[in-house]
Length: 356
Image (cartoon, rainbow, N blue to C red; front, side, top):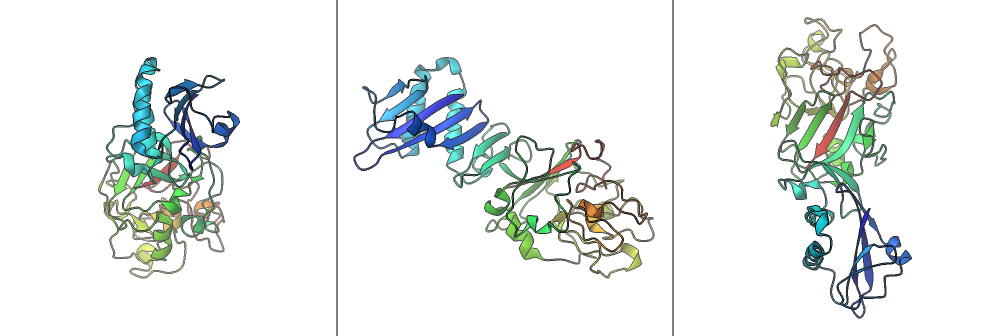
């Protein structure tokens, strides 16, 4: 653990910020620790750098410490004090930049690795820097982990319900960040595990609403004979899969279309809520109850599937006693594309959802 204190004692202004850097990954903002160390009212003799009684490095100054420029200048001074730490100083500077932004898009193209950061809203977020230019903020994980979290009864987790759950330390389990309701987005990214297959979609929104608000505003939709948001980049390949029309298009809140059985009609059946794809389930023959849009909640959603009198109330409408062939969660496009090779119920099959 490496502690840096930035303290300011200007006449009518007395504040102290403590940043705890865990390696180069985790940032926690704490004011309590500073008070506990009794540093809030003192400057060292030089007004520069000192160590407290526990060996924590202190930056003290009796002038203005509220600007980013001051913080970065003081961090530069640490080069002569902790030269053995090598690149740690540069990483800490970048952490300061990250802390002062709203989401991971602030460090898009920075060359940083995947990391955890603290936003100005006080939200600890996971940043994906590997896919499609980086700068992606994780908002949700839908996992085949044996839990029934993303159910139809809980479908508004994707829109108006601000409940959060899960942990950044266990991202193969169901997870939801408050960033789903806080980060204003344009683009959305899906990364499947264990395959590593990913798909990004640009300009899904105009950057003025969060994903939660966007999904809520979309309402239930009949997509028969309609196209969705085209994939901008990624490794998802719809050829020779159960994805209808070999399409990787992204949709939201799809009504059940019953495939060729009902033709162009939709009805309020086994609907999907939240992100979904157009796929037929494995039990559907090619000529009936298949494409387009047969049982989208079961076939290619992230969990919320409207149940009927014969289906279950769990994620994807499981368990399914009707003999339709549903036995395992779809995990987005994972089942339709033949990617769910992990052990069922173990969390190995999961989908991470990011925005920027």
